[in-house]
Image 1 (spheres, rainbow, N blue to C red):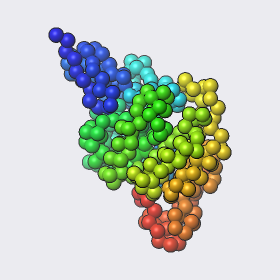
Image 2: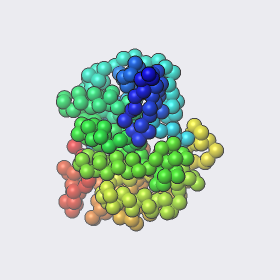
Image 3: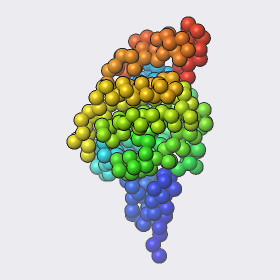
Image 4: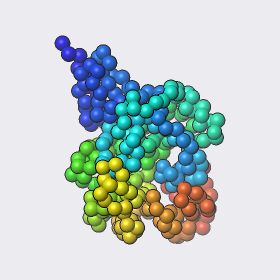
Amino acid sequence: MVNLIQCELCPRYCILAPGQKGECRIRVNVDGKLTALTYGHPCSIHIDPMEKKPLYHFLPGTPILSLATVGCNLHCKNCQNWEISQAEPTDIETEYISPQDIVNLAIKYKCPSIAYTYTEPLAYYEYTYDCCKYAFEVGVKNVLVTAGFINEEPYKLLIPLIHATNIDLKGFSEKFYQEVCDGSLKPILRTLELTKQAGKELEVTNLVIPTLNDSDEDFRQLSKWIASNLGADTPLHFSQFYPRYKMTNLPPTPLETLIRAREIAISEGLLYVYIGNIRHRESSITYCPKCKSELVERYGFNVIKNLLNKGKCPYCGTLIYGVWE
């Protein structure tokens, strides 16, 4: 009798025969037991600025230890990190680093936070969870940078350990998710809702790809949904696409398109809308939504001015969404 098992981590619900890997290439049936091949084996560890995640409303200007293992449960044709996200665990030589050692690295290099990022931290779930648990216990903050393609129950177990998230809302149609990402939209929307309901600092990124998700209607529907379901104070980042992986046939996103996206999002009531992957001064500034004063100014990934006083506008006292200190 074949010892089949089903992975219940993400909406794919992969059914695995002995020795077979799931779509993420991380999780495998080993003698009837689901095993994460990349546990404890990060393929990338860096210290980044918080603004690179991008997180603009969480501990601005602080360094964050960032890590990833190979693998992802989506297969986006435009992936900028495809060399590791679409790799096999055996493709890249790694060494074992325990969750405790990851947290100790953050402490050693004076990083108040750890980011689980670059590929898909929800696909290397067990490693993410154990790192988060140990970090949480010793006062190091946890940040998820994720596509959000996960089932509700495992996410509910993880989210109490998380302090901030940036979730990619890659498009706003099932067609886009199926054709570009080999995934589906509905689970991502649910992950976004659960994150906001849990009271975690949440920011959303939409990578704008020419001809695929760059119409005014795309921007309007996405912005309306965020305003209605996550709140007008949820920061939204429109990011510039660069030709990568299986989408080298498309041009980079014009700045004019990103500016138009930002204007539409603001017209739909969103209070904090930014442009990423390209320098544009106005769209990297955090303004007070009430008195319109410039509160946080950034240049690239650098914070060059921060006038907030305990998270409040110094001019009118308005509380600005986020975790500022």
